[in-house]
Image 1 (cartoon, rainbow, N blue to C red):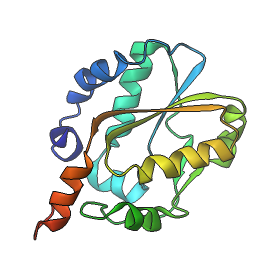
Image 2: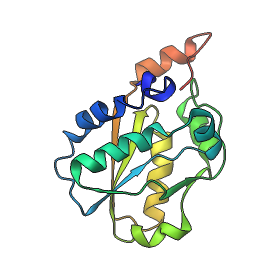
Image 3: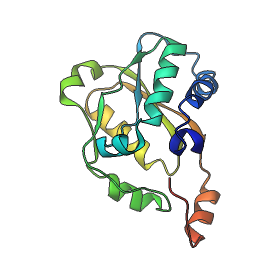
Amino acid sequence: MLALKHGNRISHARLMARLVSAKLAFVDETWLIVPVPLHPWRIWRRGYNQAAELAREIARITGGVLAVDLLDRRKATPSLGGLGKAARRKVLSGAIAARPSRRAMLKGAKVILVDDVLTSGATSEACVSSLKRAGAAKVVIACFARVLDEALEHVRRSPNPPEA
């Protein structure tokens, strides 16, 4: 995961999406595949959005409709690594919203929200909330990895937590 996220190994997205898609047998062309958005500055620095790369492959595998620009990261947020759930929620407050020009797509839609790693769930919650407010009928979160609470506690106690 870190090789995809920080190591410019975009080719890893294909295998990772295949593994995630194995749990999405119910997805067809009636589902929207929406990646967690990155702020434009983060995309500019990294060169790509790893969640969008996963979403692109998941859409190809499942036949779902890729909607990369449906959500917008309105404000730049610092790296959330080492932050607890409450701090992450605070940082993300008002950061993610459905793009007004794409809201019509969301009315009554079934959405697969794609992320690389689900840590505290704060980012997913912000995205799901925005999707639901814009009219999505159902949102399912699909991620490649899940960080366990025990791991989060270990990282918070560490003097040099890794960047997420």
